Length: 79
Image 1 (cartoon, rainbow, N blue to C red):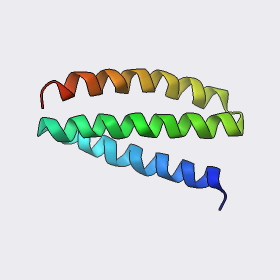
Image 2 (cartoon, rainbow, N blue to C red; image 1 turned 90 degrees about the horizontal axis):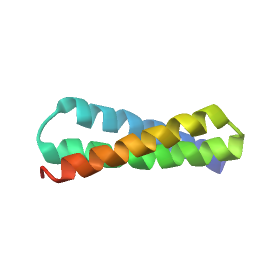
Image 3 (tube, rainbow, N blue to C red; image 1 turned 45 degrees about the horizontal axis):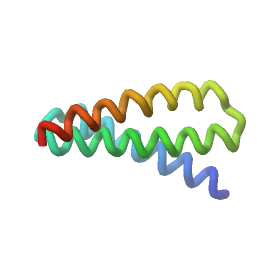
């Protein structure tokens, strides 16, 4: 398994754990960490997309990165 495949797997696992954390809904600290994980996962997806030349995935995760940064900002104020 090459490095890009490891990056994809890390992004996928982080995305799953982040979704569970955010869906759980409380405590606020768990939701905030969920958005942090989503942010890291989006960066990993963007890196893999650049290497693979998958521009639609890059565009999608660039938008998700912005949304997740907003989520981090909103939820860390509640912690």
